Image (cartoon, rainbow, N blue to C red; front, side, top):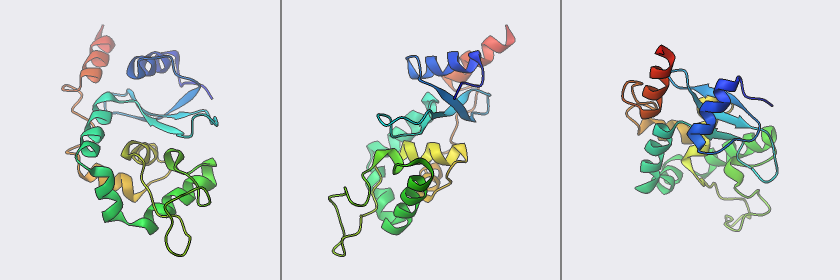
Length: 167
């Protein structure tokens, strides 16, 4: 797996603040910058899709900071969340964001089944924006954002990128 271009590798390095491992760009923001990457599959990195856009990361973090993870789990429900985890497990070999599988889970229903769990809204949203696994957790999250992406003229990362494109 390789970055789409040297330019993408440079942009993602700046977005993450470090050199990324092997990846491909899975989604782009309106300014054309990488906003979601798909990482090479590795055991030590259970999250396959990452949001790299700092503005989008911050917006989702604000939702999480006010109890968004718990609220999403309550409103979406265990069944729908487990369906997303099951689809991710079938496609990628792990549950979303590395949440433990059915046998490993300690929070089980009285019938012994895994209880639907959301570890972080970012992982579900990255899956959705990439088109890899549209899901109700991401839809819930995105519905709480005014817009998933800031206007490129207001986004610090996009403004920098747009300025470079005109030089």
